[in-house]
Length: 135
Image 1 (cartoon, rainbow, N blue to C red):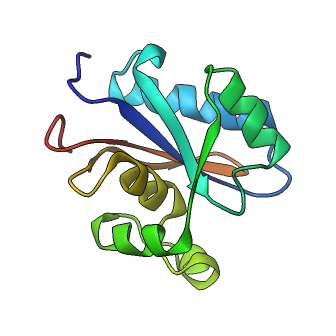
Image 2: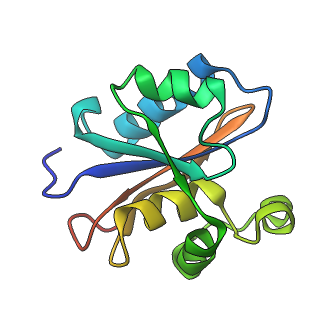
């Protein structure tokens, strides 16, 4: 599907999640939203998780490096997330790490193109800047 703004994938994952699981979930999210993998401009997560080997390997498969989002930026995006996980709220202070990371990385006017989807050990959400594509 054509989009005028780059697509940002926000990812949350457990320590045991592997690169293939994370990459597969990102591919699944892109397909569910009707985006070509080439539209993916960034993969974002919490700053303390961005250097994890599984995420780095998954991002490299898309020709990207993970983008770490600090806690303040995640918190600022929380009002725009649509998914509320009590577990993630207790750990991270946001309803959905994947949604908050995607929205924060895409900018203050970003909107979700796909709310959080989940796999066994990871979650993924997609955002685009501005009003390029609303839910």
